[in-house]
Length: 120
Image (cartoon, rainbow, N blue to C red):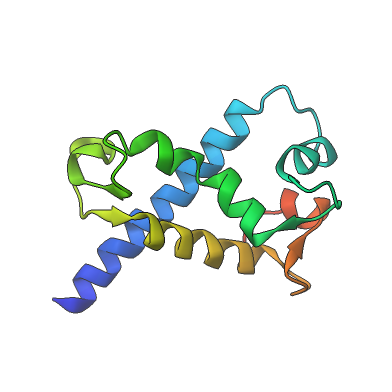
């Protein structure tokens, strides 16, 4: 049962990351290239996207879906209106995992090339 719950949470987490990516890219349709997209994500303007910047930018989908603002996506707030609740912390952890997979050189920041590539 625990493995089933863990698998279900992982599926929801992957869905949220996918949703965040789709929402972020769709909402930024006016950005024409990766360098411009990086510049929009790069809140401090240092030319790199940090984990915190990545989580902030990609957390947009979670915030939009959390209709009651309680920091948890309840089943009725999830696509299809069902599934296990997902906390903001769990979502941030899923984003951190995606960030680490995307950070191919392991330097703790995403450059334009890493940002454009799908997570490994």
